[in-house]
Length: 68
Image 1 (cartoon, one colour):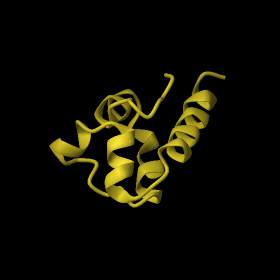
Image 2 (cartoon, one colour):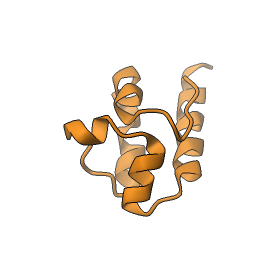
Image 3 (tube, rainbow, N blue to C red):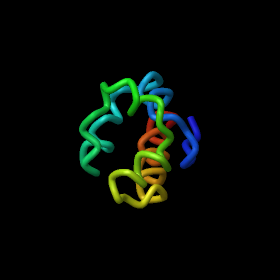
Image 4 (cartoon, rainbow, N blue to C red):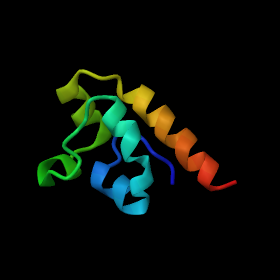
């Protein structure tokens, strides 16, 4: 799975909920909230004051290890 800042959080979690700690590390603790699941990474990072590119990088690294 290739992640961008426009990828919807719920779609990511549906593929592999094991990446949830990456969101939690950035202060995004409302992963079960319906509105949070419908947000893109860019939207959620804007609300939480995080750099979306940092989270995108971590997520792509996480999913990259899954493809090995």
